[in-house]
Each structure stands twice: as C-alpha cells, then as structure tokens.
Length: 358
Image (cartoon, rainbow, N blue to C red; front, side, top):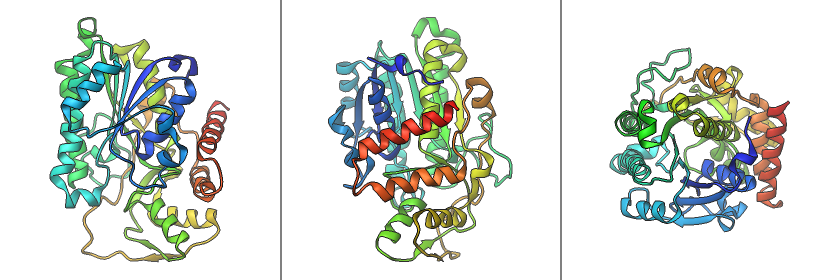
C-alpha cells in the first residue's frame, strides 16, 4: 500500500514533469507533501494536464533538455533529490521514424545522463527509470512478456527504449550493484507500463487524443491500426506502481533493485477499434472509420505484459477494469473546459485510491 507519510517532506526529482504521466505523478506527490523538482521541456499543448492543472505553480518547475548534462548536474547539485523518477523521453513511435537520431539522443543518452547525475549525487538513494512495454523483442506472442524476456524493438522508438534498458542494467551492475549496496548506497530500477491512457494527453498519433480531437471537431475518428492489440491502462495504475516500488526500494534496496512490469488486467488487452468504440460510447458521440493501409509505418500488432512479479513481490495489482479505465479517461475530457482541473485530478486520484484499498 502506498504510504502518504513516507513522501511528506522528501525531495523528489521528476524528469518529464510537463508530460502526460509526469503531470499526474507530480500532482500525486504534491498532494503527499513532497518537495517536487520538475526537469523537462515545455508542455506539448496549452490543453495538457500539466498546463490546465497549474501544477507547475505548486512545484519547482525547471525547463531544460535532458540531453543537457551540465544543466542536469547543476539541478542535482542544487536540490539534492532523494528519489528520482526519470520520465523525460521522445515517446512516439511514428515520430521516431521521422526523428531517429533525436529519439536515440533523448531516450538513450538522456537516460545515461540521469544515471550519471545520480551516481555523482550522494543524497540520491532511489532512481526509477520509466521505459515502455515496447522495449521487449516483440514476437507477436499471445502471452505477456516477463521482465526476463529479451529486449529489442523494431522501430527507432521501441529499440531506443530497449537500448535504454540495457544501459540501466549495465549501470546497475557496474556502479549500483545491489550486492555492493553498502559501498554506493543507491537503488536503481526500470519500469515498463502498457499503453497508458487518461485525462490531459494531447499527443499526436495516440488513440485517445485522436478520438477526442475528432469528437470535439465533429469529424470522424480515423483508425489506422484497428486490429492492433494493446494492454490499455489508466495513468494512475502504473504511477501507483512507481510510488509503491520507490517505497519498497527505499526500505529494502537490495531486494527491489530490478526491472518491473506494471500492466493491466487481461480483460484490458483489446484491440484499437474496440477501445475507440468504448470512448465513443462513454462520450456519447463520435463515429469511427477504418483508414488502415499497407504502406503504414510498421507497429507491432500484438503486445501484452506479464505482471506476476509486481503482483507477488510488490503486492501491486491493477485497480480498474477496462470500462472503468475508459470512464476515468473520458470524464477528464468531458469536464476539463468547465472544472478546476487540479481539483478534478485530485478527486480522480482519491477515487482510484479508494477503489484500490477496497
């Protein structure tokens, strides 16, 4: 169980805090009473959850590029974070085909920059590196990937995340070896989530933002890969896993410094067309059209995660089923124009916590 008292007063660095997942994590940490230091580029749109929630006004909001090693070390030296969540990334498959070098610079060298900053900062005790389920060598198998399965990646985004995982593993063995914890005093883990959805994401080429933009503009929802199967989960699911893992690593660094999957229930592993249909039903309007064609840039058609390790070793398990996941997500988009977004996020977090405890 997540312990709010654990976080009170702790200094936490979140890279990528202006992003979709980073904004939700920052809100949750702020509500716990943590001192949150954000390090990120500007938000993607003026409607992002980070912007509308005004969480940037409640934390230390630093705008910088994760590729800037000197700036990153300055921030570590000034604020001395005790726990680091590294989320900053180029997170889009299709964009990675257009910008492969920048994708690798951000996702691989950015990760190494954070690892090196942690190594140089005596006060940093825990580092959690957020990668993706796409880091696995995807064999289109029907069973979920385990943390011990081969890493890989077909497209530049996926392969960059596989490469980042290899770097994290190398640094953990070389500089943060759990068997030598008494020498270095640091615990490092990587975490892999499924297709994360929720309120405040407006990125291009993601199914939920695509659906909402089309509905708001009264246009048909164009579905590029209707038969692609993904493990869909609300953003609060993996974020709750990251928080729980950080607590475990703080108390028992040798046992929990590892790699971890945080995926959804099996009934949430469904195809893109079905997810879009559920969005339309929950929103009360919208129409789907299939625009798939053979020349589309390659994306894996089937992907699922095995979450047995997190379930049995951390005591973490998914809280929401697929319909609740869609309900939480669509509710944000239906209310963001006329409600206080920070307050709405707080209420969704509390509702999620109540469900998880029950």
